[in-house]
Image 1 (cartoon, rainbow, N blue to C red):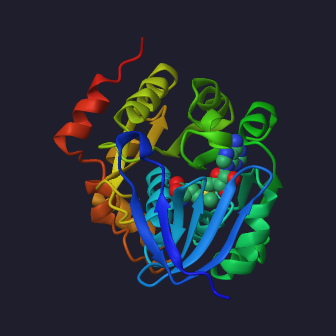
Image 2: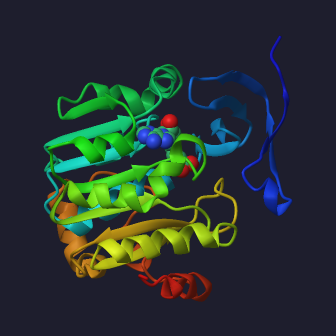
Length: 292
Ligand code: SAM
């Protein structure tokens, strides 16, 4: 029998709020070795994936997160050849990064092999082009250990992680950011999934403080993702090149044309530049984040 039920996102239980989604069909409800995975069919958002009670991806609005997490660092950098994704097992970010012809190698380090196997089955629109691309390398392992040990160097590191709990917690630590810096090429950039500032202000301030202890420039930019409930999603930004964050619309447009003007549904050169303009309450949070 097809199971139909309401499914609640429990990420903000401590704030006394839950967002509930009607599931026409629960496709999968299981515990992997690392986390609790629920995949269901939602009448508006299509297939929705939750891990440990937090929404990860939906068919309807995934493009916003994937495009802003990938095209912003790659096009701001301007000549990224080696890209590292930490987490990202659904392969949505990898699919976007590989649209950049100048990217020669993309390595994705995902801790949970079940997420990849599962995405191959349920999100083939992401995984198929990615696994068919010779530039793609999939590593199963802990992102923390990978950045601590690898001898490779990257131009862009994208941390497509779960929230700071369970296996994702370490990916918000200063030790992790320091290890990322160690394996960034000169002028490289690190971006991180950094939660919804109205509900998770401390997490954002803590990350930006850590960036600023380690990098010349630490900040965030924003995107509005309907299923990351709370208005703005903050995407953390760290680089030793202070100029990257201020790349002009004209330069971004030229780089995008050179990259092949692939189709996007959210990213434009103007949206890219504007994403760094922060609403006052977020700007204040970021301004308060000072190195010790
Ligand atoms: N778009 C999503 C979001 O922010 O809601 C993130 C999606 S992606 C599915 C997150 C992935 O990070 C998960 O597949 C999880 O297994 C992986 N992950 C969590 N902790 C990790 C770690 N320490 N090392 C590598 N991958 C990790």
